[in-house]
Length: 110
Picture 1 (tube, rainbow, N blue to C red):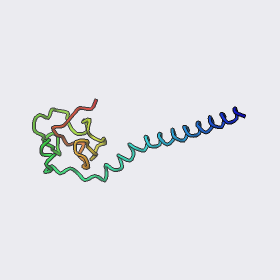
Picture 2 (picture 1 turned 45 degrees about the vertical axis):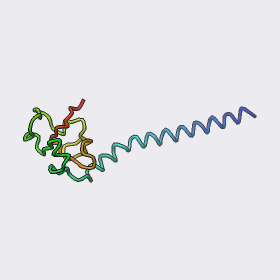
Picture 3 (picture 1 turned 180 degrees about the vertical axis):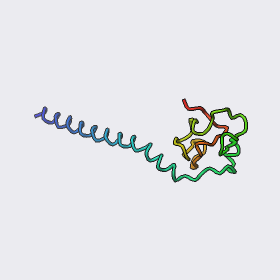
Picture 4 (picture 1 turned 45 degrees about the horizontal axis):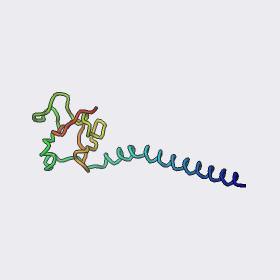
């Protein structure tokens, strides 16, 4: 009789870990998708914003002041959310920036 009880516990444990694993997997996969959807809803960063000015944010990377180097833009920055239009940026929480922009916080993608 003890063997039947242990089998029941094993089946319950397996069922629990199966459901928990599926839930965790769904949460992991839906995380990036929800971030992309929210980036479209973010307001564009205003170049007159104090943080933007402190980091020399420029909408057109080709017109950015030094220390910008050739090939640097938000599209190639580690902090940029991705895409070719506007996306989120870790340096400007709650705002979206242009892929064609640049700021002094630029860090090349690894």
